Image (cartoon, helix red, strand yellow):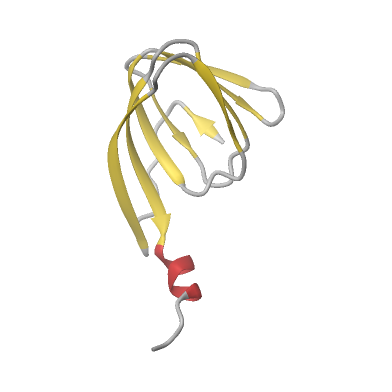
Length: 101
């Protein structure tokens, strides 16, 4: 699910990381079962996000959106893009996989 309206991500039992990503040029990236929730602020460029059902949403510099965990679809970068992002990952899943010492 993609939304132009940023939503508050659940913070209990989560860790986050943040950064800046800049593409090397226009292009398309296919996403399958996106592994985490990600808040994005598009700082530069034009981006189309197409979900698995073919629904498209367009974003331009200044727009923000959230990509939810499990998303399937494509990022279509019409230009070089730069995004600021915050990724929220479940700690519970990591804890469940950890083995006792």
